[in-house]
Image (cartoon, rainbow, N blue to C red):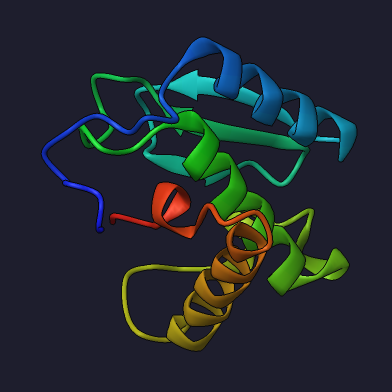
Length: 122
Protein backbone atom coordinates (compact mmCIF):
# COMPACT_ATOMS: atom_id res chain seq x y z
CA UNK A 1 0.00 0.00 0.00
CA UNK A 2 1.38 3.41 -0.94
CA UNK A 3 1.46 6.27 1.50
CA UNK A 4 -1.24 8.86 1.05
CA UNK A 5 0.48 12.18 0.17
CA UNK A 6 -2.33 14.12 1.83
CA UNK A 7 -1.70 12.48 5.21
CA UNK A 8 1.14 13.22 7.64
CA UNK A 9 4.02 10.78 7.60
CA UNK A 10 3.92 8.23 10.42
CA UNK A 11 7.63 9.06 10.83
CA UNK A 12 6.75 12.62 11.81
CA UNK A 13 7.14 12.23 15.56
CA UNK A 14 9.67 13.44 18.10
CA UNK A 15 11.09 9.98 18.85
CA UNK A 16 11.86 9.16 15.21
CA UNK A 17 13.19 12.66 14.58
CA UNK A 18 15.61 12.31 17.52
CA UNK A 19 16.95 9.04 16.08
CA UNK A 20 17.73 10.69 12.72
CA UNK A 21 19.26 13.76 14.34
CA UNK A 22 21.51 11.38 16.28
CA UNK A 23 22.42 9.43 13.12
CA UNK A 24 23.36 12.65 11.34
CA UNK A 25 25.37 13.76 14.38
CA UNK A 26 27.26 10.46 14.50
CA UNK A 27 28.23 11.07 10.88
CA UNK A 28 29.49 14.58 11.69
CA UNK A 29 26.48 16.61 10.56
CA UNK A 30 24.33 19.06 12.47
CA UNK A 31 20.68 19.29 11.47
CA UNK A 32 18.82 22.54 11.91
CA UNK A 33 15.31 23.57 10.97
CA UNK A 34 14.86 26.65 8.80
CA UNK A 35 12.20 28.22 6.65
CA UNK A 36 14.99 29.38 4.31
CA UNK A 37 15.21 26.00 2.53
CA UNK A 38 13.25 22.82 2.02
CA UNK A 39 16.39 20.72 2.41
CA UNK A 40 19.94 21.96 1.92
CA UNK A 41 23.52 21.53 3.06
CA UNK A 42 25.88 24.41 3.72
CA UNK A 43 29.14 22.62 2.92
CA UNK A 44 30.33 23.11 6.51
CA UNK A 45 28.56 20.18 8.13
CA UNK A 46 25.07 21.60 8.54
CA UNK A 47 21.97 20.13 6.96
CA UNK A 48 19.01 22.45 6.90
CA UNK A 49 15.54 20.95 6.86
CA UNK A 50 12.48 23.12 6.37
CA UNK A 51 10.20 23.89 9.25
CA UNK A 52 6.90 22.03 9.48
CA UNK A 53 5.20 25.03 7.91
CA UNK A 54 7.41 24.83 4.80
CA UNK A 55 7.36 21.03 4.29
CA UNK A 56 4.72 19.09 2.42
CA UNK A 57 2.26 17.42 4.79
CA UNK A 58 3.66 13.94 4.06
CA UNK A 59 7.32 14.92 4.55
CA UNK A 60 9.26 14.73 7.79
CA UNK A 61 12.71 15.30 9.23
CA UNK A 62 13.65 11.60 9.23
CA UNK A 63 12.85 11.17 5.56
CA UNK A 64 14.66 14.34 4.48
CA UNK A 65 17.73 13.66 6.63
CA UNK A 66 18.04 10.18 5.10
CA UNK A 67 17.74 11.70 1.63
CA UNK A 68 20.42 14.32 2.36
CA UNK A 69 22.76 11.69 3.82
CA UNK A 70 22.26 9.62 0.67
CA UNK A 71 23.17 12.70 -1.41
CA UNK A 72 26.38 13.02 0.62
CA UNK A 73 27.27 9.38 -0.03
CA UNK A 74 26.48 9.53 -3.74
CA UNK A 75 28.40 12.78 -4.25
CA UNK A 76 31.39 11.54 -2.31
CA UNK A 77 33.89 13.01 0.10
CA UNK A 78 35.17 15.63 -2.34
CA UNK A 79 31.71 17.27 -2.40
CA UNK A 80 31.08 17.38 1.35
CA UNK A 81 32.41 20.94 1.51
CA UNK A 82 30.25 22.13 -1.40
CA UNK A 83 26.90 23.79 -0.78
CA UNK A 84 24.14 21.26 -1.53
CA UNK A 85 26.79 18.61 -2.18
CA UNK A 86 27.69 20.46 -5.40
CA UNK A 87 24.28 19.77 -6.94
CA UNK A 88 22.02 22.19 -8.76
CA UNK A 89 18.31 21.62 -9.27
CA UNK A 90 17.68 24.36 -11.81
CA UNK A 91 18.06 22.02 -14.80
CA UNK A 92 18.63 18.32 -15.55
CA UNK A 93 22.43 18.52 -15.21
CA UNK A 94 22.44 16.42 -12.03
CA UNK A 95 19.43 14.18 -12.72
CA UNK A 96 21.52 10.99 -12.85
CA UNK A 97 22.95 11.80 -9.38
CA UNK A 98 19.45 12.48 -8.04
CA UNK A 99 18.33 9.10 -9.38
CA UNK A 100 21.37 7.46 -7.78
CA UNK A 101 20.45 9.11 -4.47
CA UNK A 102 16.89 7.80 -4.76
CA UNK A 103 18.17 4.29 -5.53
CA UNK A 104 20.47 4.39 -2.50
CA UNK A 105 17.63 5.68 -0.31
CA UNK A 106 15.41 2.82 -1.55
CA UNK A 107 18.18 0.28 -0.91
CA UNK A 108 18.79 1.50 2.65
CA UNK A 109 15.06 1.63 3.37
CA UNK A 110 14.48 -1.84 1.89
CA UNK A 111 17.05 -3.32 4.26
CA UNK A 112 14.63 -2.52 7.10
CA UNK A 113 11.37 -2.96 5.13
CA UNK A 114 10.78 0.81 5.40
CA UNK A 115 10.80 1.93 1.76
CA UNK A 116 7.16 3.03 1.84
CA UNK A 117 7.73 5.19 4.92
CA UNK A 118 10.94 6.76 3.61
CA UNK A 119 9.76 7.20 0.03
CA UNK A 120 10.58 10.63 -1.39
CA UNK A 121 7.57 12.79 -2.16
CA UNK A 122 9.13 15.78 -3.81
